[in-house]
Length: 316
Image 1 (cartoon, rainbow, N blue to C red):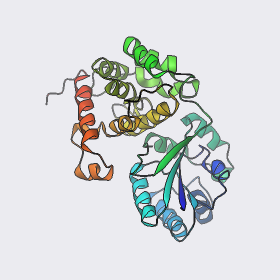
Image 2: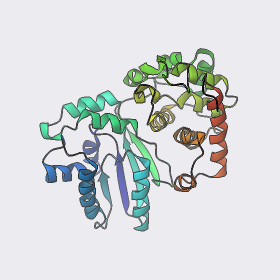
Image 3: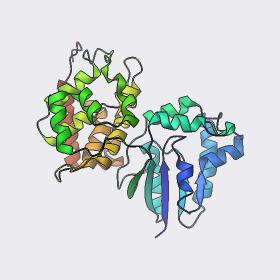
Image 4: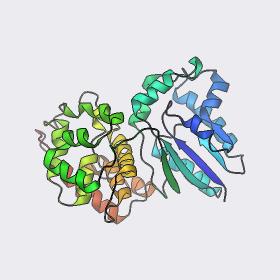
């Protein structure tokens, strides 16, 4: 069966280098951007991107055999559209996530040839809005490729859970997160700066941990707001749910002795949906993400934990 390999990762993460190892026809948005504009340093408007992707898709959808689709592909919504288009053409769709810490991607980007350097604000924005894949929604399978580690090795699931319940999220991060990622969580010590959360970010996570009474809710509590550290702009945290889902993806890829009753795909989906859940997930969102009643019940269970685990002066 013909296969479409969709690369996911921010500029500088190493997608093009990895693509060379696959020995397949390689269609790259960067190649086209260089052909059209002569540089990656500029031309990142919505209009410019539309030009590039129209040309990319013209090449991709006229190709008959297996191939690599090389673009950042960080947002799940965009990947869903691509997945549906490819399934109509009878492709098996694999997502290969090239995941590195933000600082490593920024460093590798700065080391590129002048015309291939992408503005850092573009990379930082993309990094914050990366969303984890979901089999059957935006891919048929996925795998992670990385030269870095998210967890110190070896990290046992039950040991981490017990440690978090006793010691809280900040000490848990210090104890179990690798040096590659530690700096990405430094702002969890800060206040929320919003009337919806008068407590510090880490205090909210700790309150969720203490209000969780089964393993699924406990590990969701530990992971769900890790993205707030990098996403924090004043009292706003746009994208933190997506970024937290990527941390969860890396966590489950490396954790040892995961119990059989823990469904990692459900926990990742709870994290992705946990902000939308406060106002109710739309019918279109339920359909697009193929959310059955089981996962909707889990999302609502965590919503109750999330809502009561805070200090606020907002009266609803």
